[in-house]
Each structure stands twice: as structure tokens, then as C-alpha cells.
Length: 258
Ligand SMILES: Cc1cc2nc3c(=O)[nH]c(=O)nc-3n(C[C@H](O)[C@H](O)[C@H](O)COP(=O)(O)OP(=O)(O)OC[C@H]3O[C@@H](n4cnc5c(N)ncnc54)[C@H](O)[C@@H]3O)c2cc1C
Image (cartoon, rainbow, N blue to C red; front, side, top):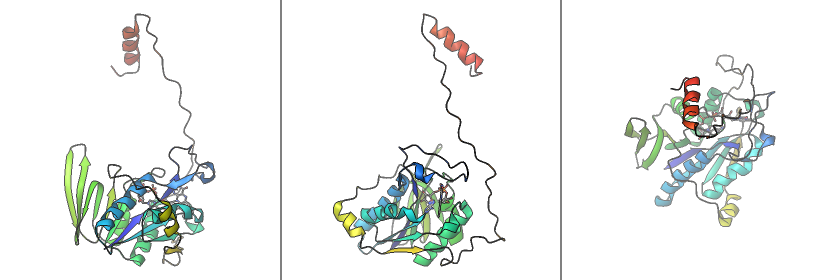
């Protein structure tokens, strides 16, 4: 079984995140870069299967700036077998379609039985990449799984929605995306960090993957402008002087809530 895990480097969720207002891209200099937590969970899902099934290969694939090496190596330190890092400055500002084309090409080149991705990255938050990749690879996709089960020829799991829980299944090869309900990523050990330094780590660019970044035949989105979110205004404070109930009711009526 060959499992490809899609991992993304993101600005640390706990740090201050900023957009570069010139480019509309993440200000990478402004915050520590980390492996997206949902990506850690996706790696964990693959490793949990590999732990129980000898001979499983777990390949992590990331499209990220050259500076993301330490983040990709973290997945190797967790236990992934090898890494493919797509590094190409012409992909800076890539939209979802171009990112999906690049990742699908990298996955096709690597070969796969199963692709595991997060359902939504914590910075870009497009939430559609796994579906686009599945479409380009012409394989089924199971979305937003909170439980994952892999057999020799199929993948299944639970998909929780507001209305209930669906049990879904697809034949392999397939793409799945997982949610934060899946187990957290394991800690890296010193032994794992040392072992990661010797694991296969391939860097490729778009041309090597056969992707034409400036293809005029493909529609790309264009960012017209970007504005920083305005600072939050302080809320209304109601001080109880024996009439808090009345004040609260008046406030709700004024806000159109009641
Ligand atoms: C030089 C360079 C600079 C970049 N700068 C930025 C930036 O400033 N801001 C930004 O958001 N993105 C940046 N990217 C990455 C890329 O443009 C986005 O990953 C892409 O648009 C996906 O958007 P999303 O996170 O909203 O996808 P979603 O659909 O929300 O992601 C869902 C899942 O798809 C997978 N996935 C998403 N993106 C990647 C990826 N790049 N590699 C591997 N797996 C992935 C993960 O499993 C993720 O959990 C950059 C890439 C390069 C090469």
C-alpha cells in the first residue's frame, strides 16, 4: 500500500497572522511557520495504518516555498517514508486550480493507492483542494472523514454532518480528506528527527511535473484588492444597577435580535 499525504506549511496558529497587503499572500516573515495541524493528523492517519501493516509506504507531498524544508522534514521525523517537495517561485500566489494541478501531477508521478489530505487548511481555508485533486486524478473522493478505515482494496469512514453521520466507502485508488475529529499527530522523537535526515527527500519544480504555470488556456483567479480585517470594536457592557434585565432587553430590541 502506498499512501500519499498532502501537507501544507502555514503560519503558526497561535502566533499573530498577517497578510502582505501588497501581494495578498501570507506574510511569512511575520510568523513562525509550522506544519498545519490538520496535516499532522493526516500524517498520523497514514502512520497508524503503516504501524499495523508492514510494507506500507507513506509519502508526504507539499507545494511550498524552499524555506519549508524543516516543516516537511517534521513529517519524516513523525515516521513518513519519503518526501516530495514542489519548490518553484513561479508558483508563488498560485490559485487553487494551479495548486491542484501541481499536486495531482506530483501524486501521479509518485504513484498512490490512497491520498490523505486535510479538509481545510488553517490559513488559506479553500477547502476544495482534495476534491480538485481527486477530479484531476479521476478517482473517487470521500470528504471530511472523522473516522478512517483502510483495507487492501477500499477505504471507508464516517462523515459527520449537521443532519447525521454517513458511513461512506470507495474502492482504491481514492482521495480522502479528514477533519479535526481524527487523532492528533504523534510527537517526534530524537531518534525520529535523526532518522529523518537520511530519508529520501526529493525537490521538483513545475516544469519537471509537466505543469505549465502560465498556460493561457486555463482560467486563473486574480486578486483585485486586499484589505486588512478592521480591529474589533469593543462590545456593549451592561452594568447591573438593578435594571440589567431591562437594559439587556432594550439592547436586543435595538439590535433587532428580539
Ligand atoms: C512559493 C509559494 C508561496 C505560497 N504562498 C502561499 C500563501 O501566501 N498563502 C497560502 O495560503 N498559500 C500559499 N502557497 C500554497 C498554495 O497557493 C495554497 O496551498 C493553495 O492555494 C491551497 O489553498 P488552501 O490552503 O485554501 O487549500 P484547502 O483546500 O483549504 O486545503 C485542504 C488540504 O489540501 C492540502 N493542501 C493544501 N495546500 C497544499 C499545498 N500547498 N501542498 C500540499 N498540500 C496542500 C492539505 O492537506 C490541506 O489540509 C504558496 C505556495 C508556493 C509554492
